[in-house]
Length: 441
Image 1 (spheres, rainbow, N blue to C red):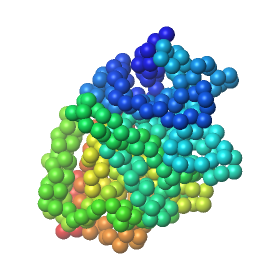
Image 2 (image 1 turned 60 degrees about the vertical axis):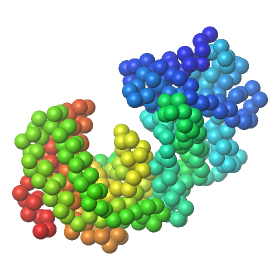
Image 3 (image 1 turned 90 degrees about the vertical axis):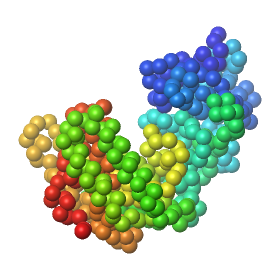
Image 4 (image 1 turned 45 degrees about the vertical axis):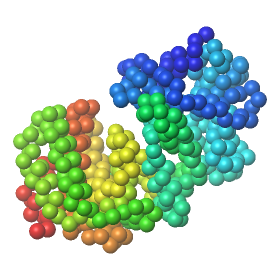
C-alpha cells in the first residue's frame, strides 16, 4: 500500500481541476481537519495541500473520506488504498463528505442525495436536487487562495440586500491554515459555498447562438440583460466599497492596457502595425470622464448568465478572471469593464457562427448585423436602468473593449489560431477613423 500523498499524487494528475498539466505533483500537507461524520465507518478529512511542482506553488483543497472497505455498487470515487487509511475516496463524490459539508454550513435537508456536475474545472459543484425541497448547489473550490473569494462575497452581499438577479447564497465554509511558505503566518480562504440551484435555466451563450442561427430577434433579451447588469452593479455599489477614480487609478489602468498590448504584440504580429492607433485610443481614454470605481463581476460574458424558466436573467460565477491574483480581483474596478466584456461576447456569437460554418457560402449567410443590434439593445437597457449615459463615456468604453479584444487576440493565437480573426476584426474596427468620429469630443 502507498502513503496518502502517493495516492493523491497519482489521482490528482487525472483530475480536470489539477492546474499542473504535464507535471507530477510534489505535494506537501499544509493542514488537515477531521469533520464529524454521520457514518461510523467513514472519516471525513479536509486537506490543504501545497503543490511545489508549480512555480509559484499552488494550494489545493482536497476533501477525502477514509473507509475500511469499498462500498457495494457504484459507490464513491476511489482515490486509492493507502497505509494510513485503508481506502480513500474523493469527498465530492462521497455521501459522508457531502452530508458533512451541508452540516458545516448549517443547511438542513431531509434528502441529502447528491450528484457532481461533470463540466467543472477549477472547482467541483455538488448538486442536491432530490425530494421536494428547494434544490441547492455546493461549490467546492479546488485551487484555493488566501483571502476572501469574490465568488462568495459578491453574491452574498447582493443576497443580503434582497437582489434576485443572482442565485440566493445559503452558506460558506472558511478554512484556516499555517502556511510555512508564507512566513508561517495563519492564513484564511474560502473552501466552499452553497447557493440556490437554478433548475431548468438556459445558458446565455447557448441561447444567443441559437437565436443567431435561427435569425431570431434577440434584442429584447439583450435589453433586459443590460437592465439586469445595471441592477447588479447598483447592488454591489450599495453593499460594498466604491469611490471616485483618482489620477493614480487612471494612470494604473492605462499602464496595464499598454503592458498587455506589449505582451500581445509578441504573440500576434498583426497587432504590431496597429499598435500606434491602439495606444492612441488608450491615451485618449485617460483624458475622458471616468465613472466611480466599485466591485464588479470581472469576467462578464454570455456564458456567465442564465435565463430562468420565468424569463428572468441571473448572473453567476463572480470569481473574476481566474488568472488574475485574488488581491487584484478583490479591488474596486470600473463597471465599464463588465459592459465591455458583454459587448465582446455578442461579437463572439457572430464570429463563432462564421468560424464553424461549413463553407464560404454559409459564412457569408451569417447575419453580421445581429451583434450590432444586440450590442445597442444591451447598452439601451443598461443606460435606462442605471441612468448613466454610457455614450458620454464612449472613448473610455472603447478603450476597455479594445483591451479585451487585445487579450482575446493573444489568447486565440496561443490556443485557437483559427479564431484569431474574431478579435482582430474588433481591434481594427475600434481603431478605425469611423469609430473615432463616433466618439464625443
